[in-house]
Image 1 (cartoon, rainbow, N blue to C red):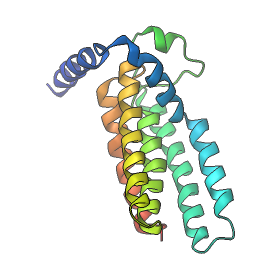
Image 2: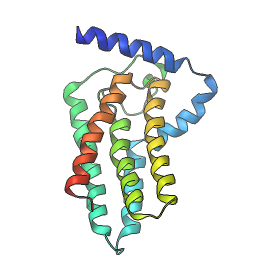
Image 3: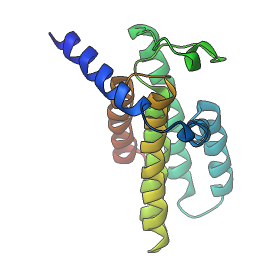
Length: 178
């Protein structure tokens, strides 16, 4: 019964999202690249490097490191759950093959960009803090939607990635972040 509901939900939402205008393909390809794990790793290394020696920098660096560790946990979940990806041209052209559930892009961006939204809202003055936190939140949503639009994931993969990522983000903020 639950499986049937998930299949129907995924099918209906996928048809709705993939039916959006074709001119969105290029912007969504750009957006999805911003959520690539290697881009996130480079982004974290860059931010952490810039923070070394700054006041309150070490807890933020530790939190970003925990975010990268969380991404490894997501990869482990994918390995054990092993849900096949949608049968799309996008998936057939992917360089790195992995399972679909949960979405690594949704999980990783929720953790990393969510953590950066938290840090910017805490340490930067308004209105810049609000603008950056909102931009990071928008980016998280756009990256997740791009994964369905491009055919890389089912909607429930993205929703699960966001949910697991939110839990991990909360744990990192509660335990490590200043």
